[in-house]
Length: 136
Image (tube, rainbow, N blue to C red; front, side):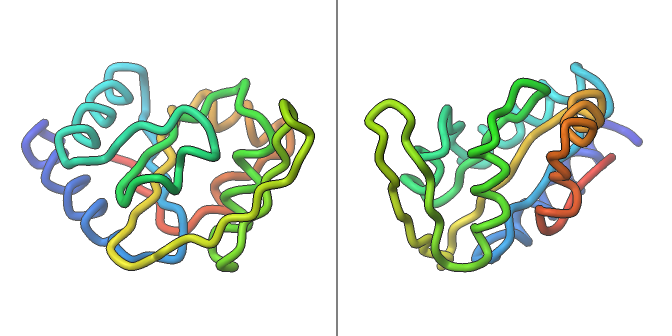
């Protein structure tokens, strides 16, 4: 697939996530494609979140996952469609409860295939826990 048609198809996928009650999943085949997808997300106004509590602070956000991703990210993805998310903050030893505002918001996970396989081997099946998935 050419870069232009690849960009167009991921843009269509990302626009379909607006207002979704599911977390989208973008799977890159390799690190080059991963970097391209991250740039496209950024160019489309998605903000990169560095931790789970930052994910709901902006309307359009993405979170990169890899083999070292912590369980709280998986918990977030599983709980997101329920309308209430409880995340335990290990630093202050307290739970935080969030209620996502789905209107015009979009949450996307970005991962490459190798890391997705390693996460699944650890028991974090992001493929089944997330909503729509995109793979070029």
